[in-house]
Image (cartoon, rainbow, N blue to C red; front, side, top):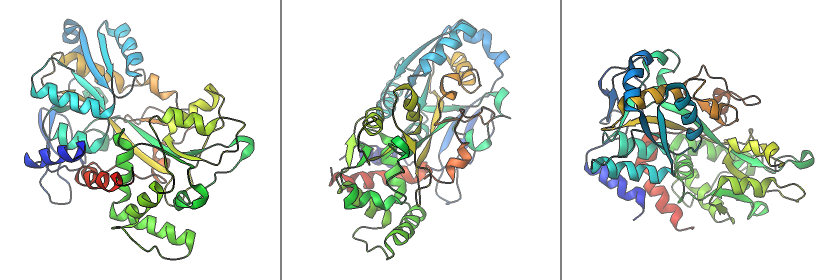
Length: 389
């Protein structure tokens, strides 16, 4: 039984049903995250919102804030925070599943762990950490007007996107215009994809492809390309695409960085395509690679997903954690991320990087993230793909 399936069973036993939050205001207590489906909702613990001026003195007395993060850049932000407030940030960088497991173990055991986290893998975050109350939501009072309601509960630190990328040396066009081409014999062994068993995000992308409205668009794209209806050997077009992609020599890597380098090296006759973090486009200049994003693939050009910034239940340094959350949600605190394309602050007053498009434009061509659907269906998708790995 895979890790996600064990976690799903445990959450179900506790009576949790994960619902997508429409957003709510501050105040102490719990924020009801009920959605239109009519299923039981989870209650997200909402920590009382406070202003910066009311936090500084107590935060300085605490003197430190401990952070677990899936992005190493938090250390740079922490240095700026310490310089501004004199409060030390002790940051630990870890993979998404490590963070979720560590927080779960430490909160259950009342251990002296993190005060706050920057986390991803929405289905597990909702179903295991928010539903259980292990993570709590905090919205800085000074920034409520700058953060759209949909990004407030849980608080979205940033959105990221993974986009189909290719080698464009000498003006070469993208070798595909339709997602089904990745299943063609002509693209055998030429599709790079981070192993979904090593990162929750790619597993979530595959799970979302099986959602009925997404699957319907995949079926239509198949007809557009092959001029015939898709004959299913699996439950729907999403599962069918997964099956055909995995059995077409899919190159599963362990790192988006290394796969980006493999695709983008100049001087090669490479027609490969990778689903890669768009933020890696920075390597085009930094590592002298030939890279371009394919943003007009039928029906989708990739996936976008949230990273959350949340407090940990029983935080030993709550004022410092609140103050650092506020700092990260400002232009000054987001500086370590805002210079690169592919990262979009949950505070929409912070401009996107030069040369990038606003998230609203990416949303039109990318599969979105649905925490409830992911939590309810990822285990079965993982079980399905396990037969091809």
